[in-house]
Image 1 (tube, rainbow, N blue to C red):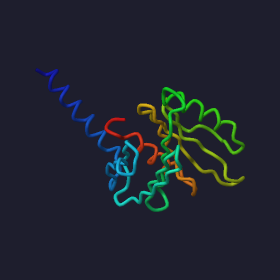
Image 2 (cartoon, rainbow, N blue to C red):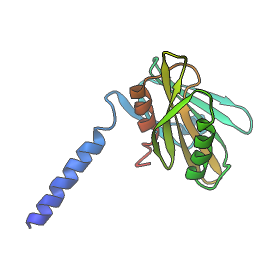
Image 3 (cartoon, one colour):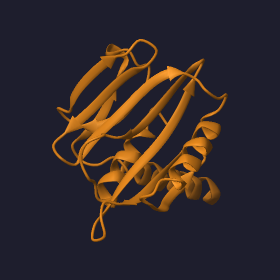
Image 4 (cartoon, rainbow, N blue to C red):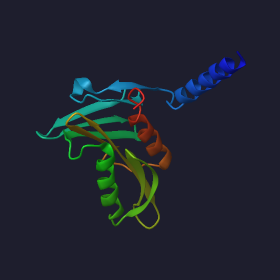
Amino acid sequence: MKISKVVVLFFGIFVMACASEVPDGYSELSLMKYGLPVSLMAPDSAEVKTMDMGLIKDVSVKKGEDYFIQITMSEATSMTAEDVIADLKSDEEKRSNFMRLVEEDPKGFIVERSIDSTRNTYDFRYAKIKGDQQFLFQTGLSGFYSLEEVERMYESVQHEGGK
């Protein structure tokens, strides 16, 4: 009997901890109506823009100056997200402004880059494979972001119903 109470208590704490990862003012945003069968956590009232370039579909989700994510959908170049990320990580480490990998997991990473001799910026890559389609998430192509901003964006793209 005591063991089941401990299990219930642990489960309750676990659920509350997971729920706290979603920042206030964020909700699930399905990109299905924009042609991408994925979702992410985004600030309420985020602006979504799409661009169809034939073989690649590009969707951006932006809110203010501190949340800007670009998602591209294309034919998968690898069988797993892990393989896609391994290739991207290798390319990243060869860039002249590469500083270090701040965080990495099998499906993504956060990177620090130098802007100039006095400032750095952060970026991320995260990949998903669904069927024969590859989805690459990254910070928007314009702007410079703090580590905290990029960590929040990186966490938001991993959501999708438990990933």
